Length: 348
Ligand code: NDP
Image (tube, rainbow, N blue to C red; front, side, top):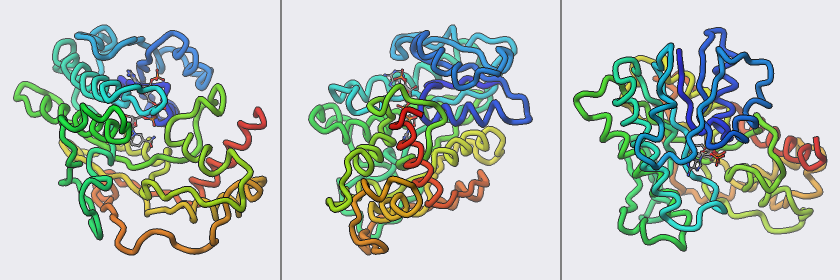
């Protein structure tokens, strides 16, 4: 395949890139990032890949009309577009608009760009949406609810636009309205591509790149670092459970790769989640498996399950069936993450 990958320097996208470039299928990828410095950040991760397999485009602002037009010009032309770029770093967004605008306009710009520049060659668009677009995250009673791909987050645009003081809601809404915008463009008759929406919950697992510092981590990894590992706090309180559904970053990256060639994936959404996990389980794994973690991570009550019996869940069987996805063991995800974060702290 010839693939356009947006947000290519991100946590998930770097794993996608790694899997695409190591595939025997000899895919070639154009990585889209926001600046020249970020081109260099990606090049450092893949020093030995030649520019026939990996080239770059810089799109400084994906909300402007025609933002992706130059990036979409390619010989050989693109047949796959993967759109991962979207704001998720809470500390980088000052207002609800900072989430909503790039998420929604970035999505419509890349899709309309395809129609302008290369409408006949692109056959599939793979969108990194989120479980944020599906779950209600406490906005309604979710007791015993098992989510599936028919569900949508109930948040309205009106409420989202006013949620400057609630970044969580602004982020959830940005993912819902970006995905809905993508489905609207796809339904236009003149479109030659189908859409695959991947809807992961929290993504954890090791980075494929080295962050500049531990204050420069992506949002989900930063939560593991800040809540579990940063302080020496073994007798402290366990962090709140937060979103108890998660997927390993290597598995969600693999979902993107598998989605390119699964024929019946076209025009489908996929919840991509492993089994639920609570803070106690994460703490137990880190403390048991990672040298140095036991003197930091709150102990809680090892071996207990702190999730309420009526906690919501999600059905990931469609992704297993149609994409052929499997979920790696929970121990691997959290032990690998914690080990790597402690290594980064040592400067390795
Ligand atoms: P990262 O923050 O590591 O990556 C986000 C990517 O999007 C970066 O390349 C970033 O570029 C780019 N980006 C962010 N804001 C903008 C903007 N305003 N304009 C253009 N590009 C922008 O996060 P992840 O890898 O975790 O996220 C990738 C995708 O996965 C996102 O769509 C996110 O919503 C989704 N997702 C992530 C989950 C998670 O737990 N990690 C869970 C579910 C979905 P730059 O480096 O220049 O800021």
